[in-house]
Image (cartoon, rainbow, N blue to C red):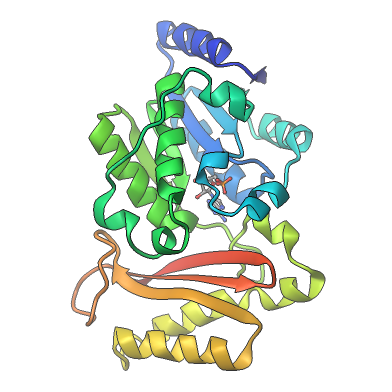
Length: 280
Ligand code: AMP
């Protein structure tokens, strides 16, 4: 596997790869890789000729300096995992390298930048859009792979791609879970043993919500989950939303629309997010 730390190196490699007529698959990550990331690599290996991953803990998308400082970093282990998974090249820039000579960009993400993650993490999605925009300019992928784990992020990426006219197909990949249902996340490494035992409760609540769609309204389901978390758990709820899966607009009834439920909650000092499809 090729390992690049400089933008010029990855640009040269991409030019050569394109000249050879190879289809490029791209998986951007922040490292501390787990099976969720590796499932994206698998998809990329299956659908493209040359698979490029990036590992970059992007300071511009962190609205909380403690979260940035404590974000797990293990590049050597990540490189081994990527190589074993059949990845062809990895780009690991420093923040200085990534942003050298680049003028700050802002994105008008409209409604998407006002709700859920955006509401609780101001500036987060501008930082995500900025770094993925730059990475797409460098890697010029034919297909890029993102996880449904970050459901709102997927909508943001699609909007950025539309606005910037990137010629890339964005493929959404299902959330990979631990055997107890906890959505895999690099931040799970920061849970204490006790918190780790409690963490799958969020997914249980989402699955229960799926059972309740026949008898309760979206507002009733949200109230039930909110009450359960407030009364019986160590979680601190940030939001629970039931939305149209395509527009991310909240719904007041279940009427033949694709429906997604999304949640964010703190468990100790770790912020967990999850989501599942409620309907169909
Ligand atoms: P991150 O390293 O957290 O920025 O994630 C990099 C990519 O992996 C993003 O597209 C995430 O949505 C995706 N991802 C993270 N966790 C999972 C998971 N449990 N299942 C599927 N994809 C995931």
